[in-house]
Length: 160
Image (cartoon, helix red, strand yellow):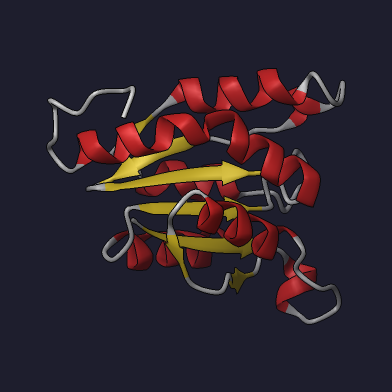
């Protein structure tokens, strides 16, 4: 399975801060068997995020965005994701926040969403490296089944 990671951060895009979440997500997905390129970095600009999502959905089965899911004024990743998705999968965000509560009382501040664009699953995770990996791991067991369903494999067993 092919995955693309998009780090959304003004400071990383401008070179003021090193991206730590993107590489951590890449490593975790590679362990899970995904083929993953180096993370793409885009600024917290809704149009640029939406463009990157559309462009990469055409060639990946999974896109994981990291960053821009909080409540700061420039956190627009969920809005950009919603703007391009065919369907929103509320249960993914709920599961990530539920698992996050085990580690931090701030988990409900995440507005991360998950949705589909064609045959691609798009998943938002927080920009914090620990929160990003923890959120991904909270739903990682669901991703292969979701990708199989998007590919038209309605006979795919959730246990596989």
